[in-house]
Image 1 (cartoon, rainbow, N blue to C red):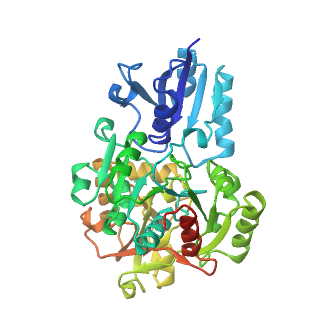
Image 2 (image 1 turned 180 degrees about the horizontal axis):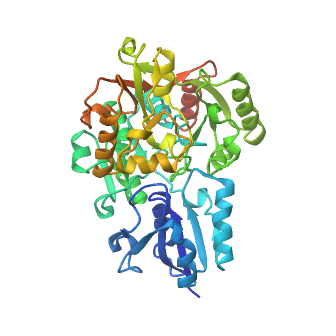
Image 3 (image 1 turned 45 degrees about the vertical axis):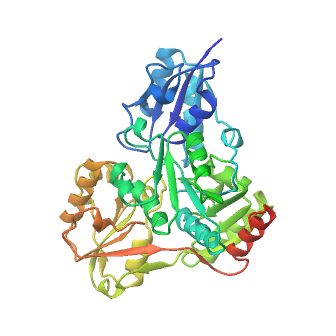
Length: 444
C-alpha cells in the first residue's frame, strides 16, 4: 500500500530529504511540504522538474499551521519532520499533532540522508544557529589553502527564489550574486568565501551539486558549510561541530544539534573570550560526557571594528545577523558586544520605527530588544530593512553582518562595520588537529 506523506520543513533539509529518500520511491506519495522559519516560502510549488516522474504536477508547499488540516483532509499516513534548530519539546509537539490526527511521525537518520563524496569532506556544523560556523569554515579553508590544497565549499541550502533556477548554483565572483538574484542571507554566507578565492556551490539538488563540485579541476577537498544546527548532507571525513557557551546546555536541548554533538570528531567551544568561565565549563563537561571521542578545541570570536573611535559616546543602532537573533534565539550579537566595548552612549531601540515585515519579525521574536536583525529574504524585505534603518534616530549604525551591508542598502547615516573571525584560545590548536586528520586521509 502506498503511504501518503507530508514533509514538514523550511526550504532546505526538507527538499534534500525528499530528493534522497522519497523521490522516485513508489512506496510513498508526498502530498505536500509545509514551511516554517523563512518568510514567504509557503504557497509555492516544488516543481515537477525537481520532483520527478511520480509528481508531474509538482508538490505544493503550505504554511506549517495547516499541517493538522492537511493530515486530516488527505488521510495522511506519515509526517516526516525535516528542518533544524528546533527545541526538542517543540519537535514532540509536532509529533503529538501528527499522531492525534492518525499519522506516524518520523525523523530520518542523519547518516541515512548523507551522500558519499569521491573527494575528502570536512564538515563544519553546530549545535545552534549563530555559534560561529561561518568563521570556522573560513579558518578551515585558510588552513588547507596554506598547505597548498584547493577548496570547493558547499553551503547548506537557502533556495528562497525560483527553485527551477536554483538546482545547482555555482558562485565564484560577485557577478554571480546578481545573476542568481541572491538575498542578503545568501550573500552573507557566500561573499567572504569568494573573497578568499573559494568556489561555492549551493542550491536544491545536493547530489548534482556534489558531482559538480568534485568535477572542479582544482578541487582537493570539499568543505561542507552547514546551516542552522543541521547535520551534514555529505558523509564527513572530519566532522567539526561548534558550540556556544553563551547558550550553555543548548547542545542537549535542540534538534538536530544534539545529533551533531554525538557525531563530532572535533568539538569547538567558541566565544570563550566573552562567555563566563562557568558556562564554558558546563559545555566542556557535556561534550566530555556525551561525545567523549571528540577532540575539544577552545576558540575565541574577537570583534574586529573599522574605525572603533567613531562609536564612543554615540547613540547607536546595532544591526545583527538575522537568523542568529530570530530562530537562533540570541538576544545580542557582535555589534552589541562592539558597542559596549568601545563606549557607545546607548543602543537605540528600533521597535517604534520598524517598517513592514521588519515590524512583524520583531513582534514574532519578543526576546529581541535593542537589536535589529538584518533580515533580507527578498527585495521587499530588504526595502523594509533599509526603511527601518533610515527611520531610527541614531548617530551611528553599527552592523555585524558578514557582508558590507551599506553596499546593498542606501543607508542615510554614518555606518561602521563589525566583523568577527576565528581565533584559537590555546592548545590544542585547530590547525594541528585538522592537518593530522588530513594526513591520515592521504590528503597531505
